[in-house]
Length: 61
View 1: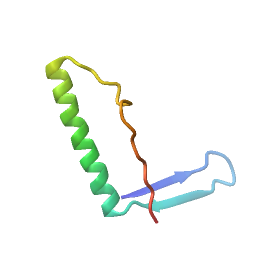
View 2: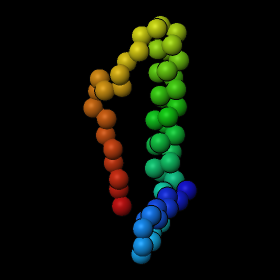
View 3: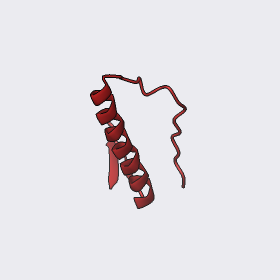
View 4: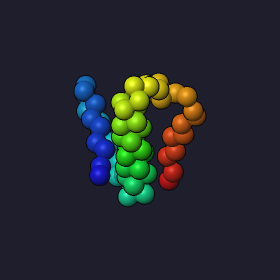
């Protein structure tokens, strides 16, 4: 997967980033865990804010 960003105004500089497969796998695991938390919250009618615990965002080179 690539992320592409382009400036809206001249000189229209841009950047392209390749997201490595390890990062995508970690993101997928996080999303799947979130879906499971959603299912439980819906079933129990208990809605957490998502900020109850420390969340880590890691960009490695």
